[in-house]
Length: 390
Image 1 (cartoon, rainbow, N blue to C red):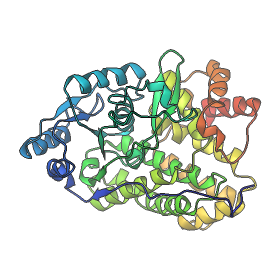
Image 2 (image 1 turned 30 degrees about the vertical axis):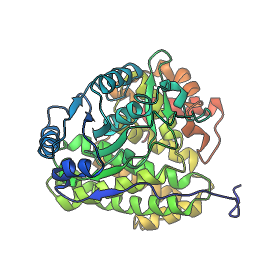
Image 3 (image 1 turned 45 degrees about the vertical axis):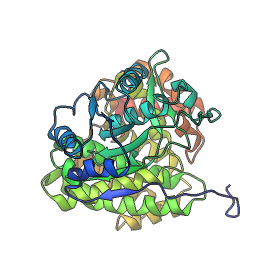
């Protein structure tokens, strides 16, 4: 049980530039941060999209000399991070602008951690002692620009990277790496396909729910989680069904950002399992989370009646019971055409033991509201693979 009198250190994240069309300002915003040679980091699926060209043109118009690195997979790997670092150093860049979905955010932040510091990538493992950064080798200026309303990764420094040798994802971070600016432009999310709008949107929903359920005392994060949850629940169906609705896209982008801030508290078993499934099978993170959510809720929520009622009120649900809350979530997943099992997206049953054992080692498992034995994790993983909801 946590103590409301325990000492805490809280900080509001980073400067945020928000508004439709703000990407056009990126050149001037970089210039104001004394950036001259930025490395734009994006994912392999985004580098030919118009927003990359728009960012490059804006930077060049402001007198900057940008380059683009786009060899980032949906689940960024350590070898890709090293390739980005080599490009950063070889081009004598002075900043990283991570633009895209969660993979671009993770890739850009991971490159920022190690490109200039000279510290080995895996020394930034969140569970290890924080590495000392030489004063003459500071982190690059980091700017983050999300193009999906889901990852929520734009205001913090953590990066999830796949260790190719171990086949596991690890959380990398350093307290001194903070984005100098997060730019939120809802126009960048308008072209997102319906399925990706749904998958990334549910990812944001999971962030808010899991963060709020983490059993520690952080009212700042709890407030962010509940407001993010309210906005996501209100706007996600509209964003999926009316993709040109800029109000819905705006509400989702802000809701995702708030939910992303809230998981400074931590996450839970949805993410612990999803991270390891993604590392092995390269599944879409948001979709994997969406499939895993109902089974984990049924495991976690008994005894959480008060928190469930608070979340249900934020979502304006008529039934504030645990069963009513889960039913509402499952109904939304049905409406969004989310598959009911990981098996439907290519994850085999024979990986249950391996995924469960890896998930037990994930940082997110440590902040889950209910401790899980390895046997309970096996059962939970098997349920998610064979049929996460009725």
